Length: 327
Ligand code: 8YV
Image (cartoon, rainbow, N blue to C red; front, side, top):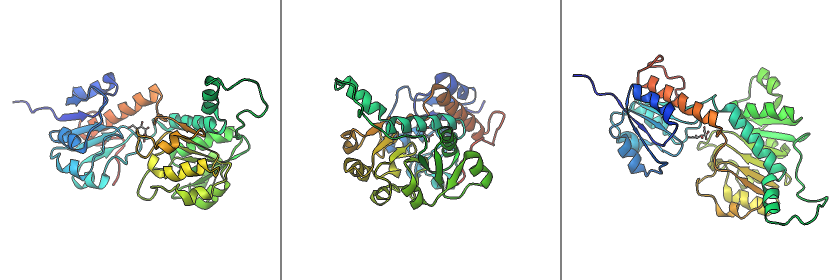
C-alpha cells in the first residue's frame, strides 16, 4: 500500500499555476475565495494538515497549534510574521518560514511613492480637482513639502529600510535612521545613512518612514508622546504594520496641526479603518499593497511554496527550507 501524500492547507486563493507545484508532492486543500477565518475555522482547517501556506490574515497561535497534531510546517507569504506565534510553533516542533528579499525593492518603491504622494498632496489634489473645486489657477494651491534637500528619518533599517535610504540619496535627501542595532559602517556608507537615537530621529525628520517589524516592543511606539517630538511640518509614512502607530493619537495630531500629513498603507484593525483617519484630508490611505506588484507577489508565493516543500522534506532542498524563522 502506498503512503497517503501529506496534506497541505492553502488559506487564500493565490496564483494557481504557482500553487500547482505543491500538488507534485502533496494533497492540497485550497481556499477558492478570499476568506476571512475565525480562530476556530483556522484550527479546523489545520486539524488534519501536515503543512500550511498562509498570509498575514491567518493568525496561528497556541490554540491552533494544539488543534493540529500533524502540523510540521507553516509557510507565511510575507516577510512580516506577527500573525504567527513563533514560540508556540517551535515548541511543537513546527517549522515556520517567511519570504524576505523578493519583496525588498518593490516595497521600497512603494514607500517612496507613498511618501511623495503624501508630501506633495497628490491624492488630495486629485480628489479636489475631481470634485470640481479647481475654478482658477492660483499660486497657493495645494502647497506641499519638498523631498529634495530635506531630512528623511527611517525607523527600522532592515532590507526595506536600506532600500528606501538608497532611493533617498537619489533625491538629495539627508538620511537618518534608528534601528535596534547600529549597522556596520560599510552599510552606513553605502546607504549614505547616519545613525540617530530615537528621539533625535523624531526631532530631525522632515519625513519619517516606518519600516520596523511589529512586536510588543514596537506596539504604539508612535504614540502621542513620540508624535509630539516631531516637527509640526513633518510627514509620517507607515508601510510596516498598523499597530506600530497609535491611530487615535495620530488623528489628533493631524487634526490639530501638530503633524502635516500621513501616508498609511497599514492599519491596526485592517481592513477596518479608524473613522477619525477617514475624516481627515491630509492622510493618504492605501490597502496594504506595498509589496503588490504582480511580479513580486508571484515571487513571494513561489518562495513560500519552495519553503513549504523543503520544510516538509521534499524537493531539491529537502529538510532545509531557504527562509526558516528562528525562534
Ligand atoms: C504581504 C507584508 O503582502 O511581507 C509583508 O510583511 O506585509 C506584505 O508584503 C503580506 O504579508 C501578505 O501576507
